[in-house]
Image (cartoon, rainbow, N blue to C red; front, side, top):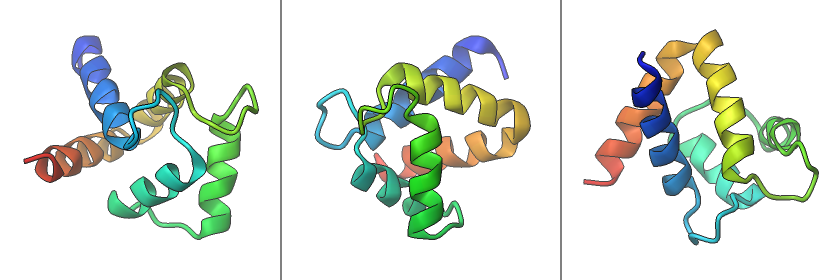
Amino acid sequence: MLQQQLEERIRTLFDYWDSDSNGLIDRDEFRLVMQVLAIPGTKTEYDSTFDRWDRDGNGGLNYKEVRSALIDLQQAHPELMDSAALTVALLNE
């Protein structure tokens, strides 16, 4: 995937996840999105992932934190990013 396409997908995902448009993804928004995207896990597993992504420990994921985590995911599981982007595109129609 080209870098520009990846950046566009990350921005689209972030904007979708940030349902209240405050620039941060809170724990509840994160859990809901993980479920909507059919990423398997329990509440505890989602919270653990959230805590790993929340590098500054402020209780919210900013764009920079999400971008960094999604780039790592893209490298490890490219199909996951494709699936997430498709799901969000369908939900936004």
